Length: 378
Ligand SMILES: Cc1cc2nc3c(=O)[nH]c(=O)nc-3n(C[C@H](O)[C@H](O)[C@H](O)COP(=O)(O)OP(=O)(O)OC[C@H]3O[C@@H](n4cnc5c(N)ncnc54)[C@H](O)[C@@H]3O)c2cc1C
Image (cartoon, rainbow, N blue to C red; front, side):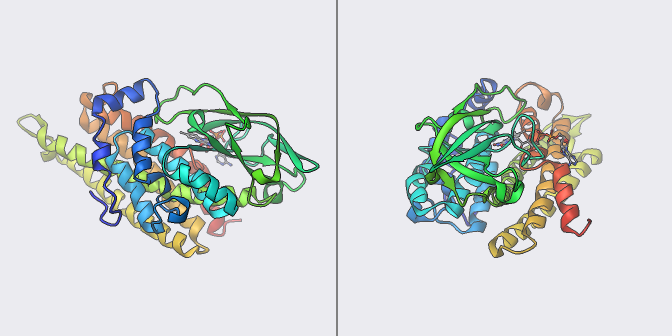
């Protein structure tokens, strides 16, 4: 599967590391910085960002299909997740809501792979209930004094910058009370804890972010004071669509792999592909993949048109694709047999990597809650 529209060839860089090396990044839970830099050279971290800010200047559809291509070509699912999270919840919000100064200062290096940004909103006591936050930015004259702790932040251990969401006006709550800040490690705005040891996506490092009594001017605000919820919700819409594309790419890759395996592996004198119990399972996955592809195309259209149906389309796509990704990864592992189950086999790794897809960017339960509201249930 090569995305004709993308016209950026990433096949060579994706083959630079062999399977054993990718396994080692996963085992040691280390960030694949060389591949990150190679992706940066191709501008993959800035697919949809205009060329004037150092991006590739691609339209929305080509950019989203570009993420699908990364999911297909890059065996290191943690690294592709890192690229997706960085672009969709970090780079895109700066492009959409940043001042001209913030864009020109930050976007070029974020697009070319020199710097990395993390999205910091979850807190130890609030995940799904995301705006129930304890991180506070208190106005003192010209400055904000910020204190708080964020958790489960993807890319944080290697991040140069973060988008931090903090409460600036608790009385106003979610809309009007939450603001987004652009903070930099080199300015001493935040520190990070050691990476957490996690089940999957292990080469995408994750940690807490600590913000301790820092003093920043309003230049560090992203968007307007009180505009944080709108920025976050828009970032999540992009993430739900972009990460679904990434997952569909990965799913297509393991799907192609299992077909090869089924044609080649023999049992009771014939190939596995001859057994209807297995081939029907694969056909069912194929139908579901194609259905998700149609949902993806629809969500991209809604995003291009900034339509009223955008959030509904993004949630339906995210829910359906992530649940398929998880289930199909396990079904495919079953067909690969013990060879798929052994530690760090291709299929075992992807099954672990797929597990979190129904949690981040809003869990399946939260997507169902959003869909229920959007279809008129009060
Ligand atoms: C791999 C990974 C990457 C992540 N990256 C980031 C990141 O970069 N930045 C960041 O800030 N955060 C990140 N997160 C955190 C993620 O956003 C949260 O895990 C997610 O919001 C769920 O919150 P929680 O884990 O605290 O679960 P909880 O909110 O405690 O929920 C626990 C369970 O209860 C369910 N639940 C909760 N509320 C409801 C409800 N109202 N109705 C029905 N069911 C409900 C949930 O669906 C879940 O199944 C990441 C998480 C993972 C796993």
